[in-house]
Length: 297
Ligand code: GUN
Image (tube, rainbow, N blue to C red; front, side, top):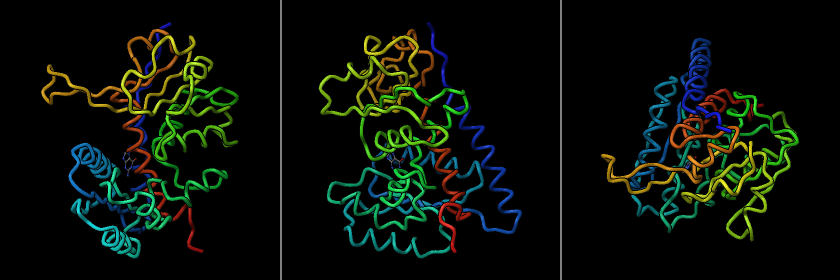
């Protein structure tokens, strides 16, 4: 078997085109353009790259955005003061604090200080909790983007065995919740594997769908999966590559070349899940501007 490639770049472009139309209609109805406030603490180069992609996507769909650059020595108190200012600013629809934060700051504490009605990342416990009980919420962007890919390619999840490798708050955990719930795209039997799992292969070998977000290049190998599996690779790892100008290349968590021969569908890295994550952030920002999840009265 040779897998069909899931083209996240193409689906993300189509999604952004739709969002641009929706933003234009919203503005034509007399509303202010949506505004996304990004906060970067420190100068981590990978974070700057991700913020660059988010800013370009905003420009593409007609959402206004600004990034507050704060020093990596900032205190929790001062950072939360800045966040409060954006919480209270009626011209700010969405707030995103780029992670990871410097070690002296607690991401939980910082995320909880964001007004949940502006939490377009979907990381606030209010939004994660609503996801867990199948209520309208800001869905975290990577799981939401993966569901859009399933929808686009008519890849069923109902009654399938989905194995999620990695239990992070950003991807693995909300992904597993979404897949297991009885909403239109879930209904899967879901297993979560993580660093304490005794024998990952015991689970992955039985998977109809594998979603890997572990941050370990080469973690999932062909002998760990069954023929016809759907492989979604969320990993974005920089590995040294002297032939590239940057000195590194991006690879996922899966042995792509070997898995391609066994899977029915597979996402490439880059160009798979990444662009969908950013497109879903645009969608959440528009939902925040429209107050669709949390109506005002
Ligand atoms: N760091 C890695 N992924 C993300 C994300 O989706 N949102 C934020 N805010 N930070 C991240």
